[in-house]
Amino acid sequence: MNTEVIARAAKAQSGRSRIVVRLLLVTLAAGLVFSILSTLVRGGFAYVEERDAIQAELLQLRDIVQPALTKAIWEMDRASVAVHLDSAARLPALGRIAVTLRMADTAPEVHVRDRTGWTRDETLPVLRRPLTYSPYAGASEIVGELEIFADGRELQARLYREIIVIFITQLVQSLLLAGFVMWMFNRTVTRHVRDVAAHLDALSAKTLSRKLALRDKLYHNDELDQLAGGVNELQDRLAAHLGQLAQYEGEISRHRDHLAELVGERTRALEAANRKLDELSRRDALTALPNRRHFDECKDIEFRRALRTGQPLSLLLCDIDDFKRFNDTYGHGAGDDCLRQVGEVLASCFMRAGDVAARVGGEEFAVLLPGLNAAEARAHAEHLRAQVFALGIAHEASSAADRVTVSVGVAALVPAQMRDFDALYHCADVALYGAKRAGRNRVECWKGEDRCDAGLPS
Ligand SMILES: Nc1nc2c(ncn2[C@@H]2O[C@H](COP(=O)(O)OP(=O)(O)OP(=O)(O)O)[C@@H](O)[C@H]2O)c(=O)[nH]1
Image 1 (cartoon, rainbow, N blue to C red):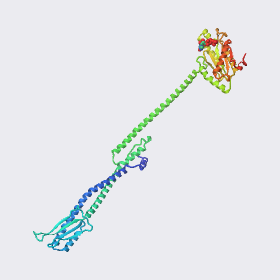
Image 2: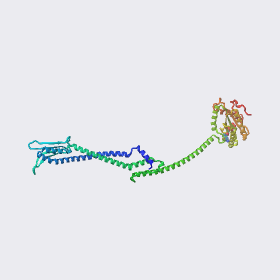
Image 3: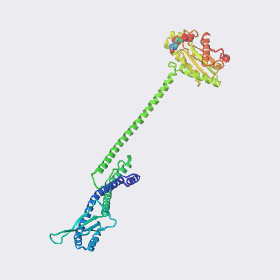
Image 4: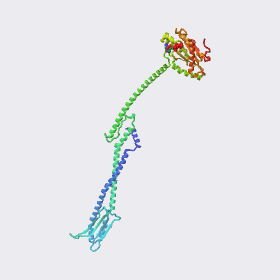
């Protein structure tokens, strides 16, 4: 593992609770409890041992002083009795020693030596024994009685010392054991677990090729090596998976770009087709002139514009004369051809921007002329009529001429009299009707408008 990873491990560990510390505390607590329990058990044994030891000491004392005392009493040597008692009283385990002197004709004498402040311990037996003297073989006489009591404080003191020693020994053992276990655990487990955690922490897509290696391991082929092997295998799989993912993403990106191109192309084609369709939907298929729909869209716009700006607006309605008869005479195909030619004339006569010449019915055409007054519109209508006449399309059944002619009705907008475009249209229609009634092949202006007849061409 590199130094950067180790440094990161140390930094990460500084703020975390560590397993080894928790384990140490638990081991210490367990050691303490174990020491207490062990001390209690061993204390029980120590009590029995100490009690027996005291008992043995007192028995030994009794065996030592008994013959001397017996002899002193037999000889009535009270001073010697006192010396023996004083000597015996120096034994630390002794609490009281009492000797009763039995003499003939006198009351028994009791000589007692007590240790200062001694306490009676009921668990310790009292040694009582008659003092029997044998002046010669085969004869014996009881000369007194000996009582020995143990000092309970001595037993307590010994027990206390023993328990302290036991407890301290156990505690030291537990601490040493806990310390050793911790050291071993840290050396063989925790340190490596920290390294694994730091390695995983520093892992990213770029460092997947960096393998996990546990440093300074004491033992090999254990669970930690298994863990390290698992981590490295996982990294390998992850790297392979990420590589494949990147490859897929590249392919998806290429497909997406291609798809976007296709969609763009299709969208542009569709928009072009829509524009074409839209244009076609506004155009008459036979004459290629704008159709009624387009005319209807333009008429209101121009009408409102004229009202708003105060600019003139004129309308021509043009109808082929006796067209039914033409069809009847020359056939429907010829009729279509005639319509196409008249349409071309219309297109060529009204080429200003804003002019709208449309086929609005079977053989009927309408022309919107923004900015032109009635006189100017009439002049254009006359020009149109003359151009159609000049086509020279034979029409022997016509009541107006030997060729195809048109009648044109002209009306100019008079805002005070016309509330909407239909009113203007109606006026132009009235004028057209007038032209038809007057013999066709002519231009008529709406008579309600004064300027309409002014400046007419001859
Ligand atoms: N060939 C052809 N004929 C059409 C078309 N649309 C309408 N027509 C014909 O145009 C004729 C119009 O006749 P009318 O409305 O009676 O008018 P007219 O015969 O021109 O008489 P006036 O308008 O009074 O001069 C009808 O016979 C329709 O069949 C078309 O697209 N092609």
